[in-house]
Each structure stands twice: as C-alpha cells, then as structure tokens.
Length: 80
Image 1 (tube, rainbow, N blue to C red):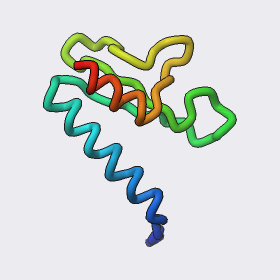
Image 2: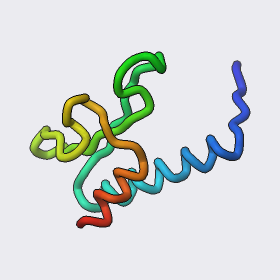
Image 3: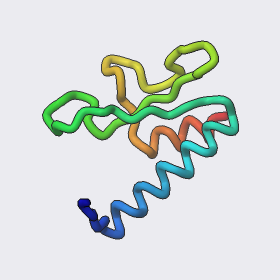
Image 4: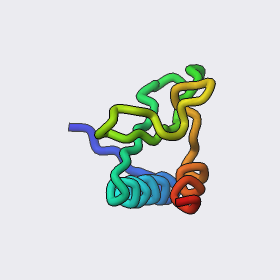
C-alpha cells in the first residue's frame, strides 16, 4: 500500500476544493475537475461547473472543456 504525504499547500487546496463542492451542491450544481494527469494537456488542473439535472455545463466550458480555477468557482458562487 502506498501512503502519500501531502504538503500543507496541497491539504489547503483539497479543503478549499471540498468546501466549494459542498457549496455548489447545496445550490444544485456539481464541480468536475479535468482528469488529465499530464500538465501539457489543455485544462490540466482546471474545473467546470455543471447542472447534473439538465446535464449541461453552466460555467467553465468556453474554448476549453475545463477553464475555471478555484478563484473562478468562488466568483461564480459570489455572483449568485
């Protein structure tokens, strides 16, 4: 079994991501992260917001399928 130690920055990022997912879920949205593992791939480490009931991308589906960072997700929530 592999055990990975996360840095404080990575833990903070994971907590922030989890908190944003919860806030979006309470509003009826879902946040997906690009599954690419290669930093060369467009969209690597980025997110999109979707409406799971309509199966539609609500934010982050512009020129790239995933184009939001966590600051953009927080801005989406602030805009209401």
